[in-house]
Length: 206
Image (cartoon, rainbow, N blue to C red):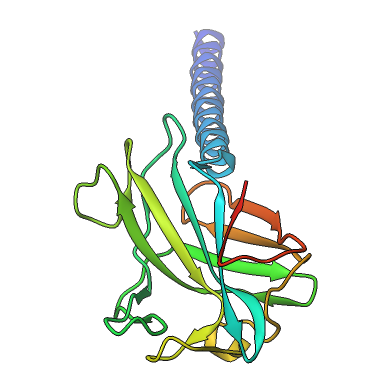
C-alpha cells in the first residue's frame, strides 16, 4: 500500500513538473515569435520615393548654391502609417520656415563630406489624395522640403549655422549629399544624390 502511494506521488510530481516545463516552453516560444515579428517590423522599408529630388538654387552670400531640396515619398505596400508632423511650417512672408509649435517623431537629417545636420528644418505639403492629417497612409503622397540655407523676408539667402539647423558650408556643384528620414517605425530611408557641375535655378536629380 505504501509503495503504491509513493508511486502515485512520484507520478503526480512528474506530471506537474512536465506541465511546468511545457508552459515555460510555450511562453518562451511565443515571446521569441513576438520578438521576431517586432524585428521584421523595425527593419522593413516603410517609405519609397515617388519621384526624383529637385534642388532649388539661389545666390548665397554671392555664390550660387542649393538652398532647398524637394522630394516626394509614399508608403510601401502593406507598410504601417507614418506620422510626418513637421516641427516647421512655411512662413507667410516666404522667409525661412518658422516653428509650428509641434512636431512628430520623424527626423530628417542631412550629410555631406564636410558637415552633418542631425535635424534639418523641413516643411510638408500633400500632393493629390489626403485626409487632412499629418499621417502618411494608404495611397497618399507627401512632399518634403528641406531648407538648407536661411532665407530673409526680402527673398535673399545667407549662410546659416549648424546651431540653426542650416548648413555652415553651402551645397554647391559636384558635391554628393544624402538625406535620411528616420520614422518612429520601420527602417530609415535614405536618398543620395550628387549636384551636377553646372547649376541652374532648378535641378532635377533623378
